[in-house]
Image (cartoon, rainbow, N blue to C red):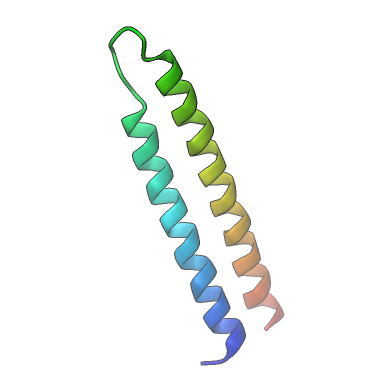
Length: 68
């Protein structure tokens, strides 16, 4: 395989990992107890950040594959 394909595979793996971890963080951030507002807010921010990194790496992967 050539270098662009390897880079695209790396970015695809990064995308998958980011989305899996973002889902896990979102699930851990849900809670019914009192005082959970701060934990839920942090979970939302971390999950949003990981989703954005995943989207950016997915777009970069697509761009690399289309350019190659």
